[in-house]
Length: 274
Image (cartoon, rainbow, N blue to C red; front, side, top):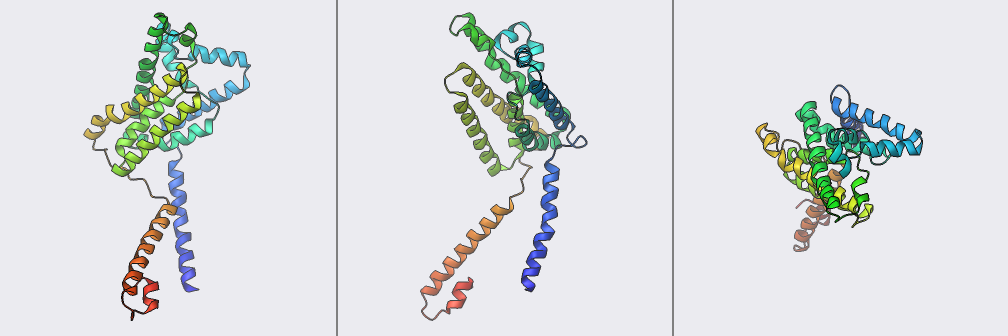
């Protein structure tokens, strides 16, 4: 009973630490103002799209889109306005992504540099994907409708900041997160309908933005001494599983040693003691 009370007390003592970690993940205006206020702005624009007439919503998105034709005639307006809307109404999903990718980077490099990394991904990926579409449309290699595709959202900037954050992660975590991000790009491409111009442009933009953040901002992060400085906290379930694996290995080794000695006490073998 005493052991149970001690274990129970230990678990109770760790729970506030878990809550503190969760609280620190939440973007706040005092610690991560860029992330926080950007999410507030996206929440407002998402509400606008949901409450206005569908025809007005479609006009707003077409006016803001970084489509090939808008890039050709109104590049500044489209590059800025397209980042004020979400490509879909799932604001909570983006809030989670901002909390795990944008906010941790902002805590380390500051709001202005986080904005610079985000903007670089948004601008470079938009121009690198839409200018070839514009050229192909003018050369009659693609239909004219492809020059007016709706292209709004924050995913390019988000992938750029995620790529920069990968540089801050320590080695094993970096490569695992990179594989997960690239897998996510592939899954989004497959969900959007592979082969279409819209899906291909989006997937290419995601890849460009991710590797721009990872490779383009790596020298700057290295000069600041930030590369490999972040080690995420290991989830409790993963620590428990690791301890169980280690314990099972020790018991298996003890059993093999005990089975080779007929006189070895069975209790010692089961307890894991040699």
